[in-house]
Length: 240
Ligand code: NDP
Image (tube, rainbow, N blue to C red; front, side):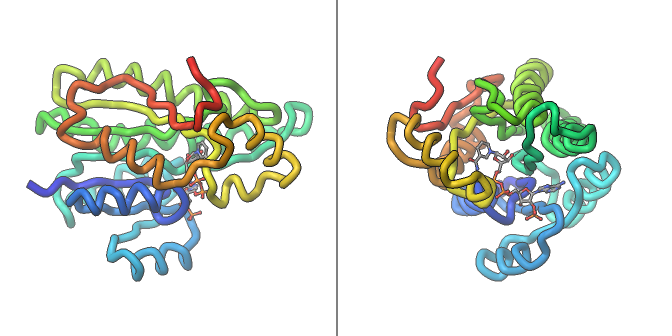
């Protein structure tokens, strides 16, 4: 049976690597994105994977888009909540808009996508939800009270929803990436990045594919006994 997956923010960065890895595993993938049409078009031309634009922070858009995708591709078995944004600044400089945008997309997106798909997974007795958290949700980070709170929220959301899905064949897990070489990290000033890399025991940034491999495992049949867990993939930067 071919499984159907939605990867939010699945057209570039870590999300692109996840979309490709799931496609490689024989899954029918639809990659969501937020606004970058050129990158999405190039992604679809390169990979043959369908891309679909909507804002994961918009509750109704998630419900409508998931319904449309299910109609076209079949029931949704796998959701990878990967879409994320940063609006960094110290508390003094952070506006309410910066706080709200990050909570709305990063954490609200997980809620909205679960509302749209979890019920169907439970009814069919099989499902996989993987939420992309962050090392900065586990350990905190200067200038990121919004992002750290949203990502930390994702870890709590994961453990709570895992309990609802456990007896129904639906697993819910999180991955907490460390610093991965994508556009998001390219936005960090070089002198700050240098200090970050110095603190990573393996001595380098991670690659998007290294996160994708973890996601593919959690989405596989083999991972049926793994639920409510957080897989840290961070080069040893944060261990506990
Ligand atoms: P990128 O900035 O490279 O890509 C972000 C993706 O999310 C894009 O596809 C973007 O779409 C999509 N997106 C953003 N806002 C929305 C929205 N409102 N609705 C739908 N899609 C949206 O991010 P990364 O690949 O670096 O990060 C992916 C995830 O991993 C994020 O959740 C991030 O927080 C997390 N993470 C990343 C780390 C890193 O070091 N890179 C470390 C820890 C966690 P579009 O192309 O249209 O803009």
